[in-house]
Image 1: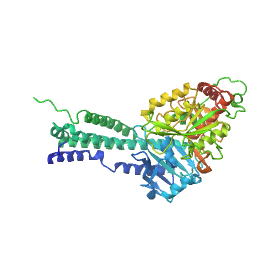
Image 2: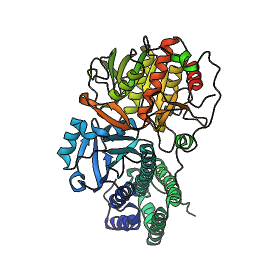
Image 3: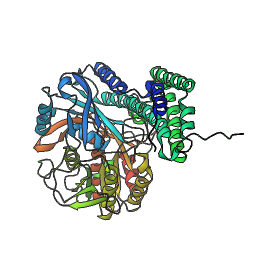
Image 4: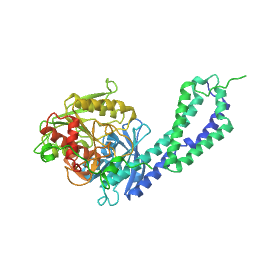
Length: 258
Length: 270
């Protein structure tokens, strides 16, 4: 690709601004922080955390937590080859374990990460859009664990984990839309009509339209599970379209000239 | 809102209802497994490894680790030899099976390891190893939702069925299909409450077919310890242990015959 000139840089900047609502970093972190706080309240538990699978697939990193030990655990990485969260990620099965301190290796691992060593852990896998494991949600010491049916707790956590998966999938789709559109602008194969394609996509009036679309999806995602699913479905189609357009031409088709 | 998983609806509340079992001779459970110990039955625990020295296990007939290998033709390699239980769960399953079928020959097939990438190829490899090495029963307390692996898992699960290998798989109590528990040729299991290790329910609304004890179970864990745990993954080895008993008393039964026997001896079968 040739070096972009000042006009092109300006156009890309306007496009980025238009897409800002959709691809703004930090949204996922806020959503996850809200989610773990809500889950902790549902279970009346001492703590709740979400550990995300890192790109290499070898570690889980705690990215959101609420309650006891939350400050110490966020940012901590653990190998997937150990611990209850590791087994859940590997097996894809929810589990509840009581008397975890009896597992000396587990207790030692936890003590190295945080001062809080729980008695009971509920853990469930969270899936991404391909059915692969995106992370693990853990609930530590739910209230009245001894008096409640542990099957009920596992069923509730399974449903909560599937909702958490929706948040992550939606975030990934927003990223895919933004990346797909920006790639269609900077594709090296698009040399000939690049300026024309860039101008047509990033024209100020179209930028406003994109911003409106992005904000509409944002509102839909916040309106409830059914609306979020619809937004997810539409975004998936847009992301697929954007990636296909990138693979075939790298730019918008040029309209015939008379 | 997401719907409740089917097994919950079936086993909670009023329960799964009654079902009519085959009219086995004598008292059904006596005929099915009375006096049986699991002797002569090879049971593979496809999981995180098994601690052979744990008092609830007391030795293994064999061990193999299935590890992802991008250079191998099938995407995995089988490493035979002793290994540790990485998490404790495989030891828990072996302990449950041996409590029901104390003379069953336990083989640890470790498929869970250090990297999530390639884990489903290890699941596949674990089933393939069990078929190739003449296992009679396979306990799989794990599942995958990977759409990419649907066809390959379906193929190897069918191969197990035709080779008379009983695949006993944990259902996943989360929404959506999971493999291999979703496939009709496996024995899919979900958790029941209660203290009876021989509790068995048939679900009249599959795909989950059987319910067994899986809540608040005292199980073997790492370092010779015992913990209390819940999940479908602990119900599964209860059914694997029952299948081992049936096969030790009636060698040569096929998966569909063993399923019919389990159905006939279920607590809700008339």
